[in-house]
Length: 448
Image 1 (tube, rainbow, N blue to C red):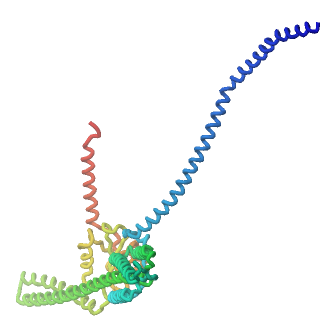
Image 2: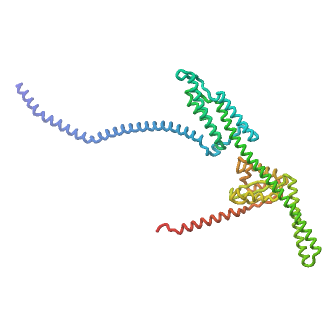
Image 3: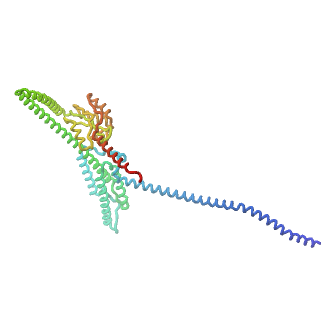
């Protein structure tokens, strides 16, 4: 019985096993189907993670590149700045604002003293080269075990250094001018450092005292040339004064001759009148009146000329402008001792400027130089040329000049209108030409 029961159980178990397995398979199948629904999402998350990982890598790579570029830029910018600085030393076309105003290091009275000092400095340089103190070597060298050969090698190199340094300094000194003095000094210092570095391995060195002499020669040469220019301008001014005096003497002589001429003509007319009658006498009387007037004018002119010759400071202070050449509110305040002061103004407008000057005031003064100097001093900060005081142009209004001039002389007459005839006629011609060009241009259609 027992055995039959077991057999029955086994049979039932075998019958139920497929059912149980089928049930589990169905459940597993359902779970698989559910999981398949989320399969896409799982793949997306994996892709997102992969993208994130790649992006992080790219960012880190870019940051590394940026860092490398920054370092490279900094190094190259430093090199660029250094090169630009070196180039600027050789650039001479500099504005005054960039180079600054040179402060004189010496103060000799004339160019000859500068010249003598330059010769003296060069003699000291020659002495230093001769006694071998300009360029020295601090080490004894042997070549192939020979000190003699070592010394010969060092002497050859010292000569090469001396030739290079002296020649370069001579070039710099020969080219020094107003707008490159500071850069020329810097160029000398840089060359001094460069050459010393090149021969440093041989223990050869250009001594600082020798460089100082070169700098001194550079400055002396610069100031020597500037003093020469000042003396040239002073000589031109003296020549102008001599011409003024010569013109005045000519005018005095002419005034004397005119007075003598009219006096003789008047005496002759009087003599003829004593013998004349009727209409002839009437004509002679009219002629005598004219000659008396001319004689009086010639006498006044002669006396004025003599007075100006005796009063060495008498003359005319003139206020003139030239709008076509210099623009508005630019006036020249000058002085002349000419008997005919307008001749001097005419000379100024003859060749040096494209248009003639307009005269706004011609002020006679017993002390014209003092009046001129006082006006110049008052308008000192309004000079057009702040460097050369011999250029007597000022950016100022005519009203301001008039106010100051009236302090020296009450009966000063000013012409405030600017005629500038040739200038305005030129503008009219140019305007007419422009109109003709515009008219011709407008005759052509934009399209066909």
